Length: 220
Image (cartoon, rainbow, N blue to C red; front, side):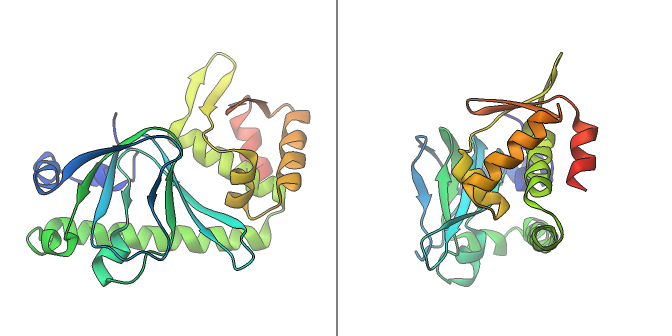
């Protein structure tokens, strides 16, 4: 499966990828498996080759907050591996996944300077994305935030069909709520609003976006 544009693997040359594969080993996880656990300390990273995962954290009250969805090409666990601090989030397989596990990642980066620079660019991009999401949470209503997340999924994983852009949605409504910073009830109402406007159609684990431009306008 080709890496998602903008994900770590898509930034590397064929030679870089070969070096990464040589330094690591292939592992597979079943859907629902916890791949990394918040609070653990480890020096290994995972580069996704197939499947999608959610990156999440829990508040003091136990509410799950979904921080990101990563797909093929995504790099996971890099901050903890580099600075030795406990993992800041839990990574869970949303579907069966395959990836390259690279242990002692700092040593690998020390001998691959170009990849280290690309990693700095990737981390910078994620910080900017986190800032953008904080602005969204303050400026957008729940329907706007849900629309934004659906657009992101459509752009990354959407499949064009005669009726619109189809997205196989690996997230439950609870998880989508955690990704938009809203309650499950508010997300359900937002989806109903978008359906009533004819912008989307929802089904079990899927969404069809009939009017992507209209959805973008609602997101703004």
